[in-house]
Each structure stands twice: as C-alpha cells, then as structure tokens.
Image (cartoon, rainbow, N blue to C red; front, side):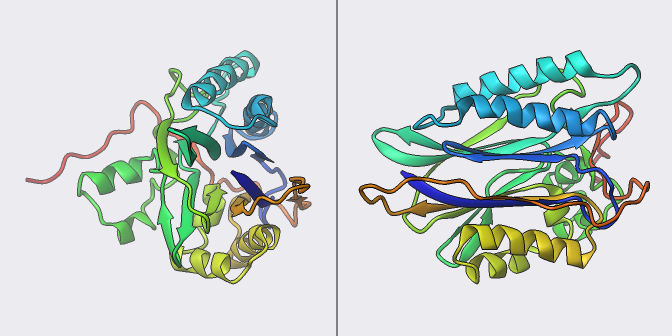
Length: 277
C-alpha cells in the first residue's frame, strides 16, 4: 500500500512552547502531546517521535514493533525526568500493516490524542481516549455533550512516563482504496466538532492542504492548546513514483503562561464517581 500525506503543527496564540511533536513517514504516522512544561513536555514528545523514527522506511509495521517503541520511549523519558517534575506524553498514530496478504491500518493510542478514519463521506473516531471523562461516559455517568465541557476533560488516565509502563490499545482495520486517516492532538478536537473536521477533510483533496486547514481552523477558533494534525491518504501505485514527505511547522503566534487546556496526567487521588443506582 502506498500513501500520500501532509502534516501541520501550531503553537497556538496563547502558548510560547509547542509540546506537540509529530512523525510523518511511512510506515508510521504519529503525534505526541507532551506534558510537564519547559524542558519536560517538549522533551518527552520529542523522544516519542525520535523512537518512532526507528521504524521509518520499513515496508510495514506490527503491534510488536509499536510495543517495543513504547517501552523505549518510557525508559528514555524516565531517564531525563527533572527532580520533582511530572513529565509524560501521549502517543497515537496509524501504521501501514499486512495481515493475511492484505493491506491494513494499524491504529494505536495512549492518552487522548486521537485517530480518525474518513471514508464513504463519514468520519469515524477509531481510537478511544484514555481519560477520566471517557471513563465517565463509558459508565453512563455523563453524556457525550456534557463531556465536552467537563472540568476534568483534560485529565488523562494513561500516558508514557507518568506511572507504570502503559500498554497501547490497538486496532487492525482493512485499508480501503478511498481511506483518509487523521491523527491529531486534543488541541484540534477541543476546538472543532466532528462535523467540522469531516467538512474540512472532504473539501481538501490534497492531504497537506487538509492538515494545514484543520490546524488553522482550530487556531482561529481559539487555539487554547498546541494543535497538530497528520492526514494520510491511500494513493494509487504507479511505476516510477516516489513517496515524499510534506511537513509544515509554524512559529508560535503568541503565548500565555495560563495552563488552561493543557493535557494533564490523572493523579492517584482522582477517582471515577460511582454510577447512581
């Protein structure tokens, strides 16, 4: 399976530091949202994509490959944690995989960065957030609409570097000829609803343009957090074609010391309320 892709990231108007990082090169497309601030969060996310880069250029990737990378990220993050600092990163992405002779998407995630699939004019979230709010939704304590504004919406329950080594969740999905995959940090999904994301993906045939338009729209909507998006398309294979990467990185448009909108690990004291019976 051949792919074309585009990527974009933006610090946002209220942050002077971009703690997001990305890798966009077959067979792996990954985003990482670091937490911990200067000399911490951006270090963790950079380590994540550096380790993921060990798989760049391979014809395919397996769940075992991703699992090995996660363990390596965790070890390196722990080795550089400043005393007394909480440092970690989300890790989500999609890889090109083979299964029983067919082409598949290998989707994986740790934390609340997400992977979507756009196909047949519909957008589907593949990954499931590892967050306090998602647990509340799953248990029926709150509804999806309430989750969008819940005070704990940025508290995640699984991250690399903040506790015991986490296991990613995996999905193996047959790849369709018209598939478009989106990998993004929560800075995008905090600002744009699914129908808005779908419209931008549908109206931008070029994956680089699509990634840039998604990030720009999130920043213009408010941009309370760093915003990162990778758009990956299935491409027809033709003799003599060469894949090439397209990556956009913007300079910060402003900054603020406020932490509103930041991803944060769940502390041991945080508990999911029991469902009223």
